[in-house]
Amino acid sequence: MDHAQGEPQPPPAAIRLTGLRKRFGDTVALDGVDLAIRAGEFFTMLGPSGSGKTTMLRVIAGFEQPDAGTVELHGEDVTQRPPYLRDVNTVFQDYALFPHMDVQDNVEYGLRIRKVDRSRRRERAAAALELVGLAGLGSRKPSELSGGQRQRVALARAIVNEPSVLLLDEPLGALDLKLRQGMQVELKRIQRDVGITFVYVTHDQEEALTMSDRVAVFNRGQIEQVGSPVEIYDRPTTEFVAGFVGVSNLVSHGGQTYAIRPERVQLLDPTGVAPTSAVLSRGTVTDTVFLGVLTRYTVALDDGGSLVAVRPNLERGSLSESDLRGQAVIAAWQLDQATDIEMSADLAGEHVEESA
Figure 1: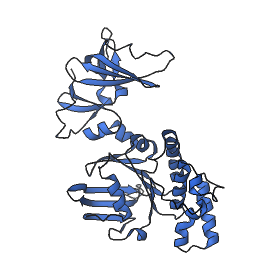
Figure 2: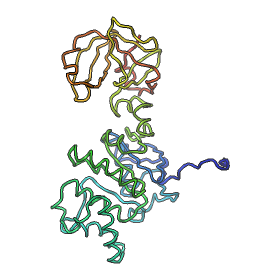
Figure 3: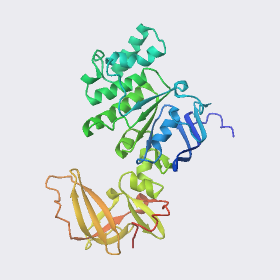
Figure 4: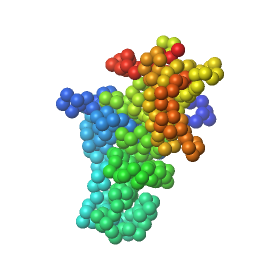
């Protein structure tokens, strides 16, 4: 069907994957996956170990051949092309830098293989190092750099080749928490600056939510849900997504199962007036955990099951761990702040509470 004149066209697909299947012996790594990744977006493939996300990345790169299905880059079928004939570069967790070369030579390496002249190599490498915040460090060896700096060198080496797609396989996994959080911000800035399509693999939900334009959640070789970070967090469509991305309460109400986030569950005094529009469940606080900016409460419901709620610690002298433990409360939540979800068959009868 033709688009009406003046109607905005959807962004073109940098990567289109159709019917991808891949087995390793008896293990099904990819089970008929379809996916389109838009040009210029920061796209994250999120999932636990063994979910298929890294296999997918390796199929896109050409390091693995699918048993069935096709890989298209900017409209061209590259399924049978070797990695060096695909317009992609890959950044790995272990950096893969040459220890005997200095930073400048490491960054220039791909350009030298492509026989770019020396002056042009120097110019492009210097620009790439400046982009990743390493200007002036070209003469150092990798062993003289911190882990975060080595990861930036690996990123500069990939960017300097000006690929249309950059694949990143858990590149921050070896860094400590504070450095990893700083690099998350830097990676997103770099991606915006260069305009290259980034395809990022991680098992870390915070990384996925922090950096991505869109996220695909993988489970057992299939994609459970694709959407923006807000959509994935606020509107999970399956029981797996609700449990894997953040924390969700799974509750049953009116014959339907809903996911409700802990920050959207209110704890009310049972002697007070409860909102008439809310779904209400009576229970007792059995556990509290102080988390700095938040305190997390576990409520055992009178009708069976439990709910988790969190409250911000807005003032000095906020509730201590023992202040609510053992107290009767009403847990209240709004239907319009919950999401009805599809329950997996093997878990459909577990961890679901009936709300009155």
